[in-house]
Image (cartoon, rainbow, N blue to C red; front, side, top):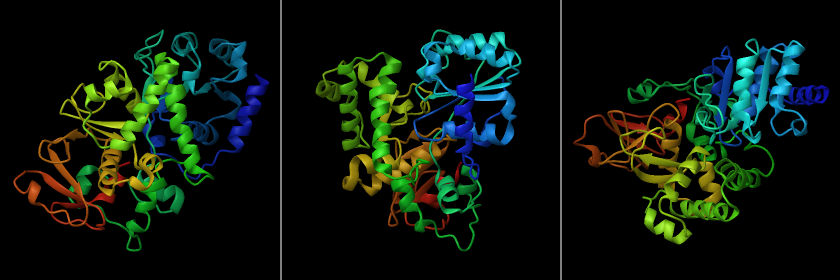
Length: 389
């Protein structure tokens, strides 16, 4: 226990507190069992450390990593028992998916220690309702994504802009400071800005490591995938990167990979949950629905640049940015006449010269233009959709 406390002290000392991710205000920190899921590298651990450092009593708080050597001879229940006996109030468990029987033991801790709050982080692939114990009635889950354009401006440029709703954007209720020029920063965001570690040395290499670990460790570990299958999964990622956005031809791709056509949709869902791809579906809505997949995109524009390099198409980047930023708050669906649909609204995404002809006969339709600072009528600047969270 002493070693765990010392490691926690070191992490706290290294934790910055000047910037909080959007999830900071979204979490109800009073719940007894809180689960924060998300892709690798989006700042899940940092937000727990910040909350512990700024809001909690250090003497009754502990954060541990689920793959710590401590757990080679102890269980999570052992830790919770001892921590509660010593007066512990808040137990934080980082990367809980690395602990084999995480769901069963979290259930036991929840049932045995009613005065102990447990907050854990886990892979975005993690299914709270699966595992050895169904935690769905006990845990309050949150899904965290990478930086919005607004967060990037605040974290890296010191520019603070308020969060806006989709209704604000559609009705031109976004007022910017006179000094602010979005396109002085927007291209850099599209290239590097989605991940909080993008200002660290060798960002490109670190991001490739994130992709590889997700494909080689996270997904295979969670799905009990064989080594041969995990190699085919990496090949599928290459096919997606070379082709996005594309309409998935399940039969053709399954033949190329040498896998059953029934397996491929499952693999794409795992990749989607893991933060590697996005799938645009029909009106059954988002990743929660069972709608037919119309297009597959890489998850974010930073991934596009790292995997496609000089072949990155600006049109694909625009669509990826739009869907990536809007999906955090709204269900984005395919449109039969344009690029995207959100509820009753239709959106066509393009460059500065994009005309309104394609949507001229459609109600509640908008042109979303790149290289445009201020909108007018039903024409909206693309960058504004980076202010939604």
